[in-house]
Amino acid sequence: MEWGLHRLTSIKDLLIDGGNSDAVIFPERGLPTNLTMLSISGPNIVKAVMEWGLHRLTSLTMLRIDGSNCVSFPQEEIKLPPSLNSISISHFKNLRKLSSKGFQHLSSLQHLRIGNCPKLKSLPKKQVLPSLLDLQILDCPVLKKRCKRDKGKYWPNIAHIPRVQI
Image (cartoon, rainbow, N blue to C red; front, top):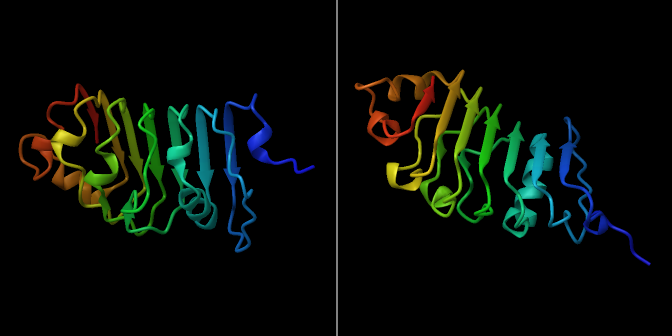
């Protein structure tokens, strides 16, 4: 009888930390679909989880991702679950843009935190983030300039958000 992570139906919160490991062993049937919070860190773990398909996690409301090497988030082929209420992205050393296409189905997204992404320079279009109530941008120097109140290129995209912290 095969026992896998997908059978752990009572787990609601899961932290997966891959550290700097090059070897990634990911369960063939994936993660429990009833997770409400998922925190993943380490470039190889992030890649494995994203390739498996986060859209399968239909109960997921909070996603924390730390330490990916990607340039765009989410990548074009990646679909995020529309149930997401909160996303935290940090330590993406090569991230340059947040994809409007990747965020377009996140109608429940209210909280977005972006930290330590030194190359990040673009945000999704205003129309893609209509439900956002809270935006935090920390240690993202390029994006900080572009989101400056009333002057930055991306200020029109975020001016409607009630709480903006940069």
